[in-house]
Length: 70
Image 1 (cartoon, rainbow, N blue to C red):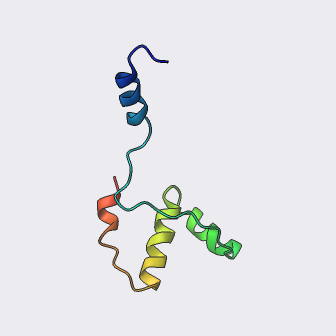
Image 2 (tube, rainbow, N blue to C red):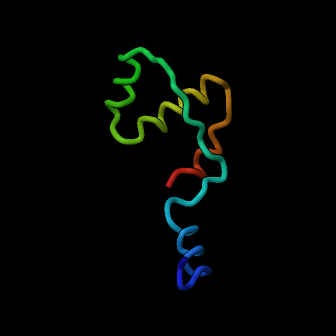
């Protein structure tokens, strides 16, 4: 048992990345290797770019993405 349980609980809750307002969903998806390589060639952020391309293909707004980028 912690000597200062309230302080220990506060510290435990503050660890890690803050919760996102609109968290992403992890999926398993099979894509052609050349498609994945094309996005990866662009460097870091390839998953974000792929998400943006999928949003455009699905005719979804990309305006919410500016709020999630740092």
